[in-house]
Image (cartoon, rainbow, N blue to C red; front, side, top):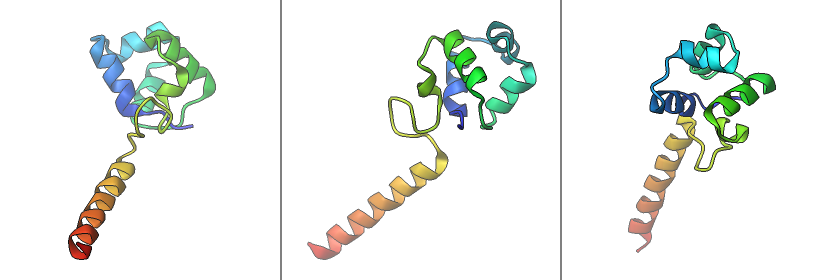
Length: 94
């Protein structure tokens, strides 16, 4: 499972918490928080701890599992490329 590092940073910033504070509140190691904010894999234990601290569903912290579209950078590029191709074909076919 890969954590949505962007969402994790957003949740932390919205509360004006440091990485150290998140580590203390969640019972996780500071280095673990740093790694997770870099987008590494997350263990079930760490995921549950962070979900509890931020009071959000655990699944919402995972890439592709949140309420909105996945925030993986490659997905945004693919969507943009698909929109470009759609416009190109529509203009040519019309």
